[in-house]
Image 1 (cartoon, rainbow, N blue to C red):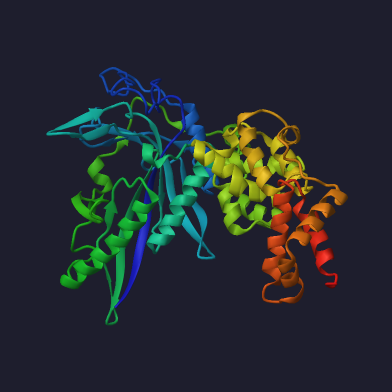
Image 2: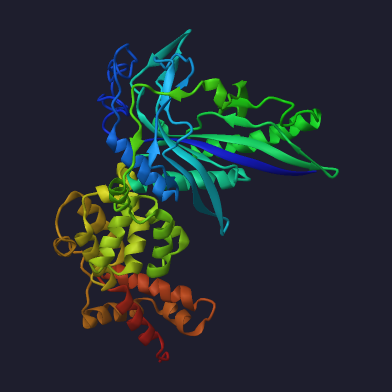
Length: 488
């Protein structure tokens, strides 16, 4: 039996606007329940929606980044369904004329490129939030009602949980680079809904299981785990009942129980006719002009996949280091600026990955928010590259630079961290160490098995004797010169 998964995605991206899609209420996650609401988002009779232009611009920018065709004319539909967190009993969305369609997004999985077609990307308003942790009651917070969402729908071009995981992470990186969404999964700013079924080839016949839509996954790990489980569950169902196939058994909406690691049946999967779409009479159609489209396209930044490839090509970064730096747009922008300011690329890349990112993570911010700036970062990298300070001292300076707005050279001098460049002083330290450690000198000169370790030991003693001020490269050169001389 051969099994192949067929996976498409519906992704809800909360757009980064100050106000909601059709009213002036603030978009906030920290407000007290039901405090950011008004007659429009509560659906009071007689209230009229007004479209948020920033949300439209963000949606179009994302559509362009996804290589979509942007509709020059679109309209708004009422998508009817009843749920406690939807006070109007309908959601304003788009149906037959989505704002963006017929695009693609390419990701790299296991060294090969995978192109995933984008069926559509349309604007809609979010529903509220049901809260189920109040004992026997369900509470409803409508602050989120009316928040602008971009729903992105892919074709079923993914064939594994790992492919889907990579696609989701790259899509999050894309929308955050564009600045259209913060993409914080824990705040519900990106929610993934995989549609999963499997193709089973058995004894020359092909069988397709019904489609399960796994609702509202808010972590990449949950996406991967839920798909893995669902593929296995559907195969097991078919093995028990060969009538468990598309057309004979119903498609389902299922929820993910992360604690038990299983999907659970919720309800039959709805079809478009279940929502009774019809044009919203309170909203005029949207027309996208050439001027509007060109203005938005001009704001397109360098996209993360292209930037990662450029970092590898131009800066000779490893794929892992490039991926780490490009994960956040501000960090990648700052990296470019530091190199432009004259920071040696090899030193700068090591500092970003091993020092600046650690300091940022410890403080719960991004590297661009540390307040150090490109000029001082480049100056520190130059000090290390020129041997004015060693790597350990450089790390100490970086931490101090986050706290004190001073040039790294002045800091190094005031703290006594500058390395000794005087050849005579360094030679004196080397001669002293050689005299004090005859056995290590003998091993370094005559014992091939111990020579490397002995030389390292001696250099370490020189650094200790100098109080860390000796230039390791100069000390190493002088040691090699002395050790190359024959024992007397």
